[in-house]
Length: 174
Image 1 (cartoon, rainbow, N blue to C red):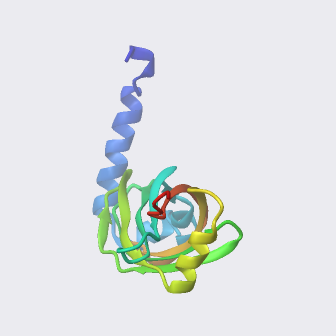
Image 2 (image 1 turned 180 degrees about the vertical axis):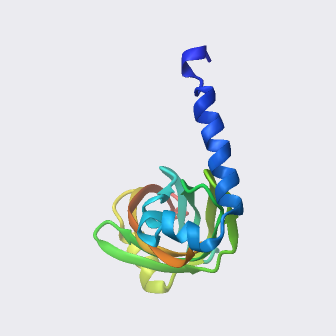
C-alpha cells in the first residue's frame, strides 16, 4: 500500500475524536445528531453472493442451510441486532419465512455475520425446491431486522438481497 492510499492523519484524528464524543455523549445529544431515519440509512445488510444450501435429498430433513448475511454498522456507536425476519423466494414463488432471535453487538464502523444454520422446510416447500429446473438457484431475500441503539430501538427494512444457492437432491443416476 503506498502513501497515497492511506487515510490522512486529519481523517484518522477526526474519526478518533468522533468516537470519543459519541461514546461519552448523553443519549439526548446522540438522538439530535443521529435521528432514527439517519441511523436506518447507515446500517446495511448484505447476503453472501454464493453459499446457501437447499437440502431435499432422501434421508435428511429438507432445509435451507448456511445462509449468511452481513450487517454493516456505519454509525460511530455500537448497535445490537435484536432479531431478524426473512422472506425467502425461490424464483418467483415464496419459499420460506425465517425468524431469528439474534443478540449480537456490532461496534461502530464494524460488521458482523448473521448465519441461518438450518431452517427446515415443509413438505410443500421441499417439493417446490425439487421441481426447480436447476441445481443452482438465485434466492431473493427481503425482510426486516430490529435494532437496539443508544438513540432508541428501531426497525430496519431490508432491501431485496440475492444469493446463489445450491440444491442438493441426492438423486442417484440409474
